[in-house]
Image 1 (tube, rainbow, N blue to C red):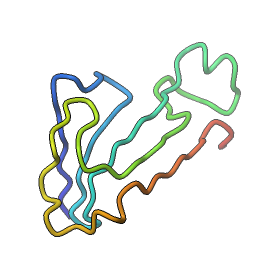
Image 2: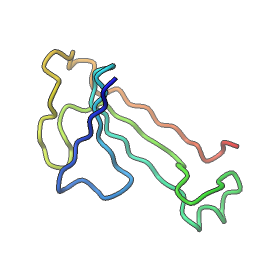
Image 3: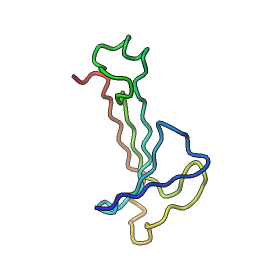
Image 4: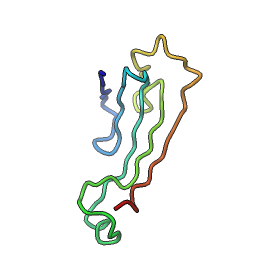
Length: 93
């Protein structure tokens, strides 16, 4: 399995990641909320600063920040793109 990352000047510094997994194959945009000190005070399920509170993943064809078409998608069924998943970890123990 090979995982590649996309970086560009417009990509936020934290909380947003683009990666390609050739096993799937798909480019995925991951947006996540990481716990801060105030989140720990408000939610007893969270243990550490940086714990992921929620994560949303979306299969994409182009970088939404710079507009570049992402490489390695020539043989991919583009009709299957747009799949998304949202996970809320705020209540996990």
